[in-house]
Length: 288
Image (cartoon, rainbow, N blue to C red; front, side, top):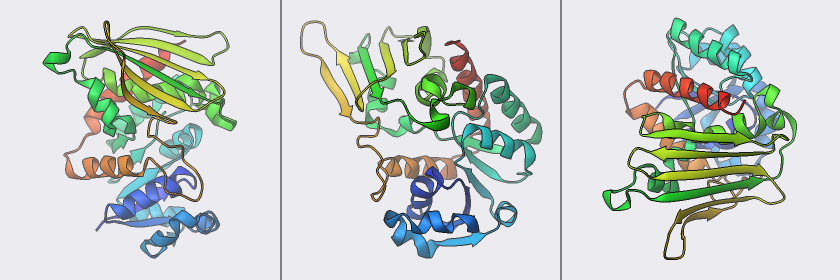
């Protein structure tokens, strides 16, 4: 049984905390999160698996450190903390700006930190369906439409690492990590409230993606057919099905558990994630 230290009182508590406990491990959180913890009834069953420490002691005691922080705070935390010998679980985007994103990658290389990034789309069934077309599906065409109301705060600020590209569309960056899929073309609206891009597979398959701010929550994945109705691969209010709501288990929980299991059972994935983050930077640049 491992101890995971969690920094981040939002998704760190209602997302990562129950995922860590469900995966059979203990959680250490800063004492100042206690009020936030007890305000969430869906976390009641996990309280016996949690201990409280100062942030300094937490970083010292725990080998696994989860940073579920906004990009600016994550950037500052990585730059100003000593995580030598720790295994870091980080969130996207790594930093608020492209320049700082590159700075964090370079720093991780120099300091030799072991880390991974929580790109959870990889663990969904719809992702697995479209990523590796079967021989029978060579040349398949897919369409993904993702709409949500514009978020509040830093999540809607491109200067803070939010915005429709860096906070939402970046989830698709892992598709480009093995050189099988390439970003064929990309565009962003003048108002920066809509992005479109086309991904091309080396077998001829394509994925058309549109992400935009609108009036509803919807996430649709279609397999486009020439002479028959389109196949609905997935339809939900979010890429994970339901929307996260206070008071009930977060719909991302099973995917977080799978992500944690992958990271703990496989060999060090740092090199792969360094490569992926360079791709994520290029992805961000493509919409400038």
